[in-house]
Structures are given as structure tokens and as C-alpha cells.
Image (cartoon, rainbow, N blue to C red; front, side, top):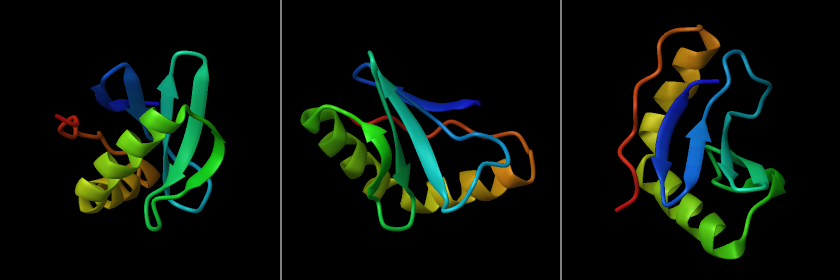
Length: 86
């Protein structure tokens, strides 16, 4: 599960050959969640509200890159880093 971004204590990654719908994983301390790439919605897990809002904002800014990362992960290709939230 390669890490594609880290910011403000949040680690973001995409698993190779993961289940549908396309999504990414995020960890923050004891919390973890999955967020859909297409609709940018919480799929599973939990995250403090402040961090969840940051994740949604970051995902909206990088949605096309996340779609490309998902595609590469399904092919088990090397993933690239995505710019963190500033």
C-alpha cells in the first residue's frame, strides 16, 4: 500500500488491486477511512470532522490525479506522489 501523500498528520494511500468503487485510504492517529474518488464521499471508517473536511478538499483538488493513481494501482504499476494540502 504505497503512500501517495502526507499532510498535517494524515497519511493517504491506495492499495494495489483494491475492491470497487475507486477509493483511497487515509490514516490519522487511531482513525482510518476510505473515501471514494468519483463522488468524494466517506465509504468506510471514521475520521475527525476537521481532518475529513481537509481530505474532501484535497481530493477535490486532485481528483484527476487520484483517478490516474487508481488506474495505475489496478495494473500494479508504480504510483506517484500527489502534492499535499497547503
